[in-house]
Amino acid sequence: MGEAETLTCHTTNRDGYWEYKIDLKICADCSTRHLCTHSKDCAKTVQRSVPGIQPGED
Image (cartoon, rainbow, N blue to C red):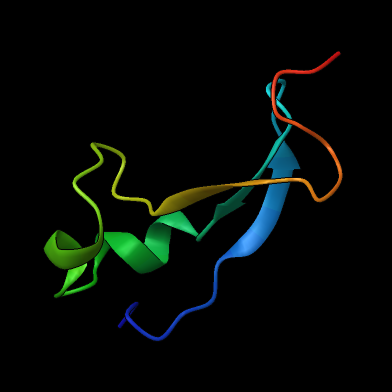
C-alpha cells in the first residue's frame, strides 16, 4: 500500500531544491514499488526548485 501516499516536503538541499520524501516503511512493503522507484533504500524522493530561487545560486 504505497501507491496512493503523499510525498511530504522533507528539507531544502544545498543546491536550492525542496526534497519531498515518503516514509521508508510505506515504500518497503509496496507491491508496485518497482513502478515508482529503483532506489536501494526503497524510498521515493522528488526534488523541486524553490519558487523565486535559481538552484545553485548563492
